[in-house]
Image 1 (spheres, rainbow, N blue to C red):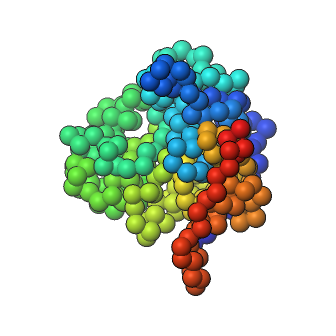
Image 2: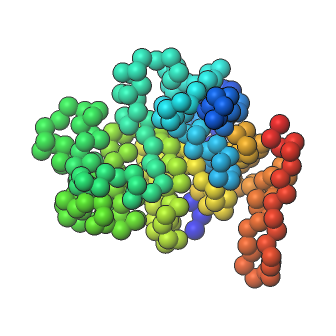
Length: 289
């Protein structure tokens, strides 16, 4: 199932501009260690894939954009702007209004991201009322409509359920509804399908694809799955050791030039071919420089 369309360049009026982004944390000796090092990119109304191994800095990049860097982390950048708003120096109140409103993030596992003591409906309503002044009745109607928009058929029933009472796919749909109910202009999806089986993965991706096309928002799709990203995104940024080592159109990913990207592709199993043992990625010190 191919979802991606030909790559679209970032517009002259970009949604997000990131220049020389750094995220650092102190080690046990108090020395700051960069986990994101000089990341730069511009995002328009497109689907941008951010790929790499665990620990490459993908999620830290997304969290820094949203202002969710863990305590102790230090975020710096030459430029970090959303629609002309300086995200590093805007007032805390403005940053809170942007978060969940104009910028939203879907996390990877609903079992840990949804509040276990609140119903699905209460969490969607809470997300909406944080950014809009509505009566309880209006908020519930909007929440039910959001659940239906993510292809939850029996929205009334699911509205009253707790997270442990729904499947992983249903929980992920509920999370997407929660993040999209305020009509964000930028969505950061951090491994949104990693906890799902292949059939549900395709359904969630098709849903995100439709929502992005209809709303015209920008999407940053964080993943370690190169095949998934190549079929879903427009552009791909490949990260290694906190840096972007290659930028390439998703449809050209199979023709990547950087040895790290080539190594990641080479480690994938191939149907119809005997590849035992699978190749091991040969990491080189110069890639981290």
